[in-house]
Amino acid sequence: MSLYVPAPRVSLEAWCAWTGNPWAKVQKVVGRSFRVPAPHENVYTMAANAVLRLILNYDIDPRQVGFLGLGTESSTDNAAGAVIVRGMVDRALESLGRPRLSRQLEVPEFKHACLGGVYALKNALRYVSCDGDGKLAIVVSADVAEYERGSSGEQTQGAGAVAMLVERHPKLIAIDLSRAGSASDYRGPDFRKPFARHFREEYASRTKRVSDFPVFSGRYSTYAYLDETVQAVEAMLSKIEMGAGTYYKSVRALFFHRPYHHMPISAMSFLYVRGLARSDHHREELEALCQGAGVSMDEVIEETKSSPDLYARVLLGNPDEDPYPKTGAVATYLRKLPAFAELLEQKMSLGSELVRDLGNLYSAALPAWIAAGLESAAESDNDLTSASMVMVGYGSGDAAEAIPMTAVLGWQEAARKIGFRAALARAVDLDHAAYEALHDGRDASRLNLVPEEEFAILRVGEVYEESFQDLGVEYYEYVRKAASAE
Image 1 (spheres, rainbow, N blue to C red):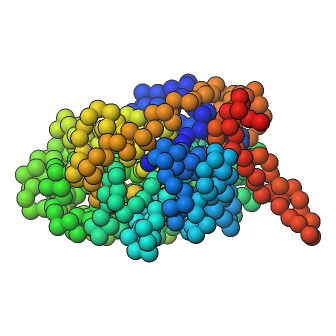
Image 2: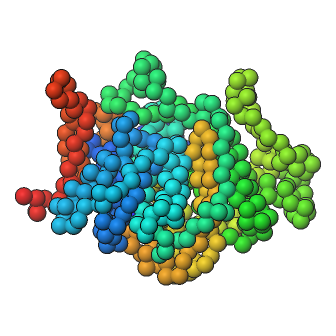
């Protein structure tokens, strides 16, 4: 695995001072900082940076790669995607004296909100298992999470990319797709990016550059997240043939899609209560939790049998109606207990502190947390060999995947090459004026954000003639160190 994040960084403590938001709450719920792309960057440059780092860090032979999949919801070209990344990487490899990627290379793009990267990973796994014929696959998840200034999502912004090498005989983690759990349901207006919004006067009126702000309703999206991840995890558990209570006690590490720090904690508490309610072996524990929350245990058990139609509630004008109010109340009570805090420390602490400085990376948020967890475990000599772990991906709109994974023998060597901390090290802290200038597309030249050893947008085409057209097409270059640029 490898990671790339842009250099411009926004401290959330500073952001709270600018906006009047409570730092204590934001730090606890969201994190510490987020990254913003420099003017010369976009989703493709970030993806190409992560892929190139992957190839160089692990000394991969580009000619052996037969699949390059891009998972993103931030594409700026509606016709191409992964092939743009391929083009950049090819030219950089050539400039470094290395061979290009194989000409016999599949270059698909996968889009489903924040789940696009997981879908790309599943297809890469199928490729190397079926028709890859000994070839390697690379998956890169890359996104720019941006929200309008003043919106409730502004503090959950971020940008970055994570690349992963997939091969038949893994050196980091092994994945068994036969035990993965899938779930999906249509949720109507749950976090959408309808093209028509760009033609409405009220959309992004203060922002001068092309914007990708989503249309979202925070409470409704949270209900959808909890409901769909539950369905995927329970589908996985049915394939593993293990009860939820037994599984949560035995699993070594849990990694969830992470739009902000507190969301996986909410998901885990909700899943835990659901697991107790669906089991006949944990009635005493469930009853004690229900009594503490002032909720009837029978009502919680009854909710586990329900199949609420969230979209129907939208059509009826009730999008904010909680589909699992009793389960949610018990989950809230559970989060206050020291025993649950200890469980979180045991199962969800790997890399958790590192990713508090990332912000929301959409499709790259889950693989970034996994990368942080594996690197930090290797650094601290925390042996995960053969340990049971799980990744739970989610994409609004609405779909989820729960995939079991296991660290293979010798995983530490590959984990130490991820370079997570190194990727975070290069940072340029933004002041209030600089942040607003970058966010709104105004002149940010005073920041002197010069690319070095990374990809950059060279220019944007302006020709729109009968014989040749490149209007709006971006041209890229790989910028080497200034000392060697000739």
